[in-house]
Length: 127
Image 1 (tube, rainbow, N blue to C red):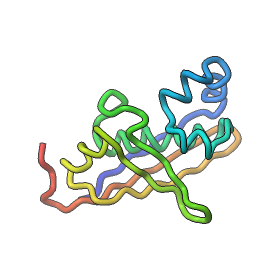
Image 2: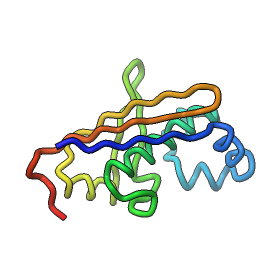
Image 3: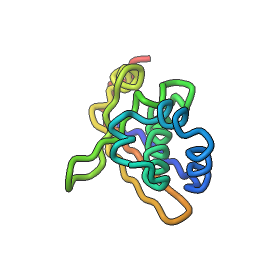
């Protein structure tokens, strides 16, 4: 069984929120690791925001189903981005039998996008 999610966001929109509500926005949406990696760069934050939304769609919950920081985008030096799930997101993925999530991030000057694919066994879904 394969689950997918995708999201697209405007980088200037993220930059505007970051400018108006820097502390609130960063602390509500991003883990300390994500904030450190992004160093306040709107394009990096936007792609991680899109990744979180893509994973929420993959999990079938939308933004109200799991907290923002329960989905974390990590990246080891020289490696691809990875998703770490915590709390409610991890529980939800477990119920769906998801054993792996692959993520792809991209951005241009104006847009950031993310695509997520979750892998589970065909008989794994346990509502």
